[in-house]
Image (cartoon, rainbow, N blue to C red; front, side, top):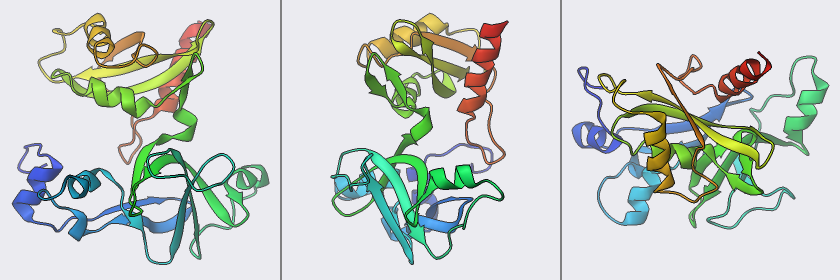
Length: 238
């Protein structure tokens, strides 16, 4: 945000130069764990270099990072797996909670719950949270994939996608959508559904869309998908 104007990442780099740095981290380990350094913030050149603006970077100094499958085997570039890390600056465990500690710390590695892919040079690309994955008729659906399509609609300000129980499909995709100022009454849920249906596989597009004034967020600005799912469960009970 510059002087009240929203600018893209590329525009900010053009204005200020390659001074930006992005860090990936979590409360259970000292930041940074993965870094995208200033020299990686380029807006011109080879496509592979431009694409890396969408990554979180490569392992920080003193941090071991792996992206692994369910059997803890390192994935191949392009595949999706869970980020696990090992560092001298990790936590020893959750306070008086051995059960949760055992879930996240395994054989000296901290399992982040974040799903990602990697490229040939070790740059890590975040995909989604493991617990947010939606399974529709046996197919995996990543909320971020659906959200990326919804954001292409010119009236959409922000959106969050969750999976809800479905007796036929196992889960169904629902999107909560906040519209840009002045567009609140110009777009219907049905229009958003049709917009997505024309741009994605049949099992992926949201069967339900709810227009909301805003998406609930944490203090750091992350969308609270958990709150949205709990809201749905509460309404179903009533």
